[in-house]
Image 1: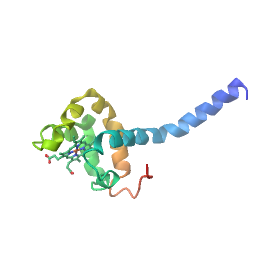
Image 2: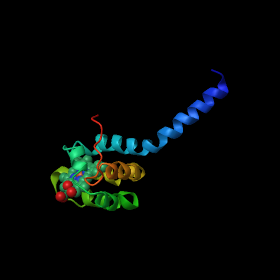
Image 3: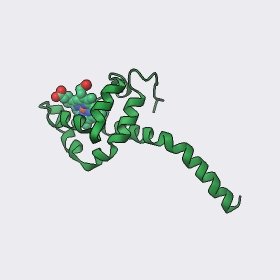
Length: 113
Ligand code: HEC
């Protein structure tokens, strides 16, 4: 394959991947950060409707962050540092896409991984 062809090919692959990339990134973040406390994992995602997730994750996840930061529960303590980080704010929009994709009224079930 010559270079130009390789170039075209990679553009094609990249564009087809990027639409699902945000959801994938959100899922990765969810598995990495949320599942350790919300053990139901994907079932937990399906306890909420799209609208609820959208609201919780709006404005860079402000409500979701506040909910954990203001919690008096012992279990929430460890999440406070994470929710205060800029990293969480940056990931909030990916998380939102993932959570909404698999909300109870979405009709989607995530692949087992
Ligand atoms: C260190 C543990 C911890 C982590 C990490 C954590 N949570 Fe929570 N979360 C809690 C606890 C504890 C509560 C209950 C807070 C309360 O009621 O005071 C809670 C409450 C919630 C609620 C509202 C209660 C409900 O079930 O409707 C949502 C939604 C939620 N978490 C989503 C998430 C998401 C999404 C993430 C990942 C970005 C996350 N949590 C990360 C511990 C955690």
